Length: 363
Picture 1: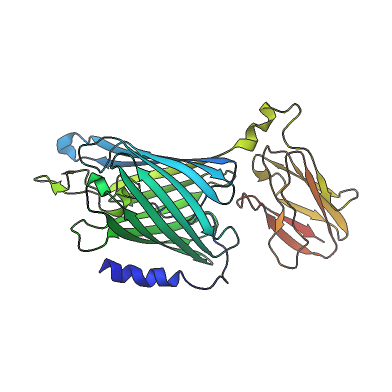
Picture 2: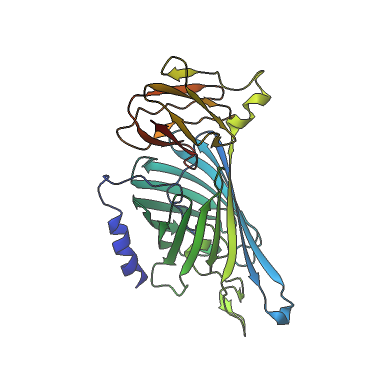
């Protein structure tokens, strides 16, 4: 039944590459999707799920954290690890999954992305892998994944699983998401699922999510079946049953360029002034991941200059197709200037940090 339901979803992902690019709210709680970390960025994701026992257990709390570290490399490649404190592999405690991800198709401007994720589960001693596909159109992203494991949960035979999910973006900052995954039949393991509310925190590079799931260990193996945290080796204990856990995930991208001032006297990257030459009628400072003047008004024929005071690169990217050309990456201390000849309202954003937005009103 599950395989028949997921098949049409995976077929939709083969739509030609003519649709809009996906936004950053593009990953469901239990799926990694095809997203890769930018080069030179260390991504730290802290996921914590909880189960509160009933009053008979004095409201004791069981916690299930999964920590993810991923390093962005050139050519859309990531190397990373996931660490969970309560493994789904019988008779083991903590679980470590080492993985890589190569986005072989896609990027910021592509509506369809394809990524392959090989992994090694150190507790199960299993070579795992996932082939993932994301398809985005306007406010919706559909995700599909085919997974394989040579020794799932430390036992033979090898198994395969399918996963599918969807993200619906309510606006640029909030989205609803859910997913389901299951081993291919014949198999008695129950399906995994999750549902969540995703947020981009305005004025920051962080995302935050609140979610519910029947999965406690969010690795390739752990997120392919219902969790067994209140069972013994997959067999229900008398009077208990697998429960729903609730939790959150907080993401922290660490840009190494932020630390350039530690090693360079007077700052990091070399300043660069590009774009239109001449005196500026208005200057917009980019600092603390914000356009400090998010709305400015000038007269036709006047120049606006953006100056980057952050220790990482920004852009000035206009939203309308008939707007002036946008900027390249502007390094710390660099600037970019544009002359506006026609009256109108010109909205813009920063491509690496799309929550940074502004508007120039030309009168």
